[in-house]
Image (cartoon, rainbow, N blue to C red; front, side, top):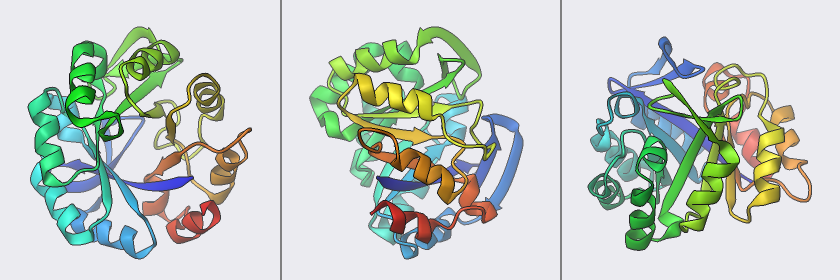
Length: 241
């Protein structure tokens, strides 16, 4: 299982929100590049980057910082937030991103997923399925739809997407543990890369994911726990190898 430490960008700074609420923000660093370098030094091979300003506004805001992170670390970067057009995806890939995450647009503009997979390949496109009470949340988690997680996952996988990132809003930033039930359900139904996100705060939580049968998910994302010190990134990476 791959550990993907998270960098959430807001106003050029590295922040974390609680349950996606822009009014419950903690700034952890004024220099996201330094944070990325620290992740590399801990042994990370991937970094999960979200442009929060882009997610809320619908327009990319932090491509330049992403480029700097890639140049400084040479790590694999997946980037999401405010990506609404093929041109947005192309800019991110040209900047060096290995995987581009479609969230709101995967729900609102399903044709974009097909076009993106056709142009860039299924491995380069991930769909972030954020949910509350089993229903898909979009627009920076400000709108809850009537679409179920499983239904959206089936559709985008049928369109050729190879990676699904599942986040349960109820546990994100709460440090209370991952949504093992939904992650297990996704893995049981679909033979693609499933990345768990939200609530992962300790080695115990990492082991909960590692112990999913018949095998652990492809990856998991953790952010706040690293910044607060409740999870040692280096130790987490070691136990997942």
